[in-house]
Length: 137
Image (tube, rainbow, N blue to C red; front, side, top):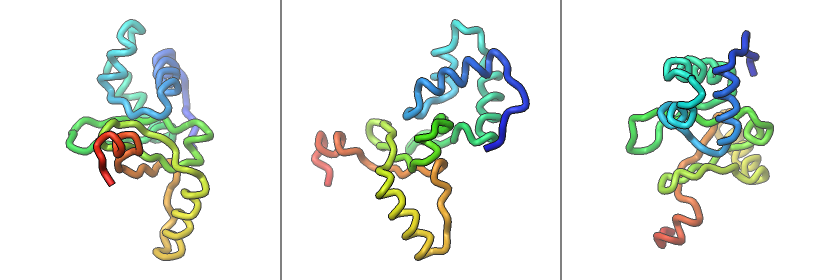
């Protein structure tokens, strides 16, 4: 993970916000709305998210049926050592069981010669709660 060259108050506010929303994917507009009283500009949010992504502290994704870009903070130790599972219905994101993740990673490597970048990986599907509510198998 690449370390930042500098730290600003706006960057610190953004990191604090993201670290409080670790298992969530948030848009720049959601962040700007939440931090509107903190005097952080939308351009500063974009600029800092871009830098945080380069540093490996956030990952960028686009949700199904959306053009909007979402960001997820992955700097925590738990996120760095996890594959993320994200529900396409409710948007909830959580960490895959570590044993299951290791089996998946090993299987892909042995069968395909491909090494998956674990902290940047997200599998999309339907969570147990949404599946039960909608009788999805």
